[in-house]
Image (cartoon, rainbow, N blue to C red; front, side, top):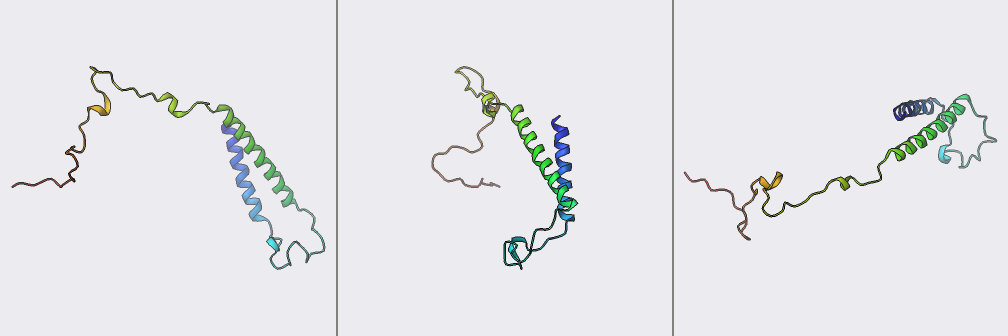
Length: 121
C-alpha cells in the first residue's frame, strides 16, 4: 500500500513540476516592474485550465504527503536503535571474544612520542 502511494506521490510531483514550468509567466512576480502588489493592473485575470490543474496537483501532492507521513508513523518502532545493542564485559575467567582478541595497534611505552621504526641493515 505504501509503495503504491509513494509511486503516485512521485508521479504527482513530476506532473506538478511540469505544469508549473509550462505556464506562462504573469509578470510582476514579487512586485517587479509594476509598483508592487498588482497596483499597475486593473484586476485579476480569470484562472486558466493550467491554473486549475496546478491546484488539483498541488492538493493531491499535499494529501499524498500527509498519507505517507501517517503510514510511516504507524509503521515506526517506538524504541531506539540502541535498545537492542547490549554490550556486556566478559566475566573474569572467560575467554575474550571479538575485538578483544586483536593485538593493540600502538605500543604503550608511557609518554614517549611515537618514532618511526628503525631499519637495521
